Amino acid sequence: MPERAIGIFDSGIGGLTVLKEISRLLPREELFYVGDTARVPYGTKSPETVRRYALEVAEFLVGQGVKMLVVACNTASAVALEPLASRFKIPVIGVIAPGARRAATLSRGRRIGVIGTEGTVKSGAYTREIHACNPDIKVFSAPCPLFVPLAEEGWAEHHIATLAAKEYLAPLQAQNIDTLVLGCTHYPLFKNTLHALLGESVQLVDSAEETAKAVVAQLPNVGANGSGQGRVRFFVTDVPDRFTRVGGAFLGTRLEGVTQIEL
Ligand code: DGL
Figure 1 (cartoon, rainbow, N blue to C red):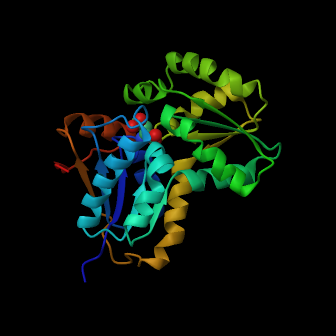
Figure 2: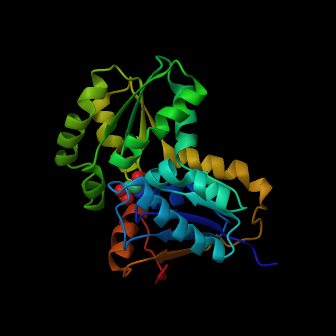
Figure 3: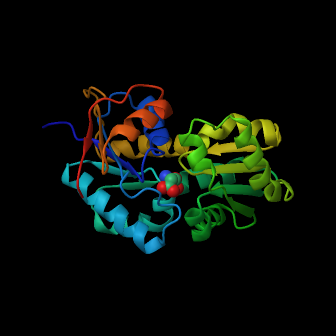
């Protein structure tokens, strides 16, 4: 029996932060990654459109025989997780619940900030998941739309990023949050900028790290690749050039063999 891969997808490059954490924890697993680069961004689109896109990408990965689906996009996890989970028989893991659970566990003052795309914030998905853990927690959310292009420009630690973070985070700081969920694939790149701005008293929760732990926990149900080579294959829906260049910078390695697909 050939080893089956874990299927991971995102609207584009950002989900590579999730892939990076998964391959750090599971270096022998085969990973298939789809970046829907022809239709990125998802964060500004309607829930109906994002659901349709997510289902199409997931169909492709399931057609490749993956054993598990990781929705490595916060916006798609926020609006499409249930339709995906009911459509497919394999486990479907999103990034929202793992990040929300971690934040609910960490927050001592029960005041959590959530930052994400417009779509993620509007969906209220993080708030629902945090309240499912503890309904007494106060959740304050803010979209940070400029963070996505800033990260892709390589400016997550540039002074422009600090200025944008100051503006976006001011309303959350005013609410005395003690925990901040980085609820978008690109935001882990802003950890240093956010730490410098918010100080030690605010703990940052990286949904990518928490999702990778959830994948590890799910693995015994679908079979681990003890003998796998840790091969990673990348698929994109637009020409690969930009994905290869910017994605390589995100991952800190060269991306080899990126294949363009049509959905
Ligand atoms: N991957 C998206 C997310 O985590 C950010 C980029 C986009 O808007 O498509 O929500």
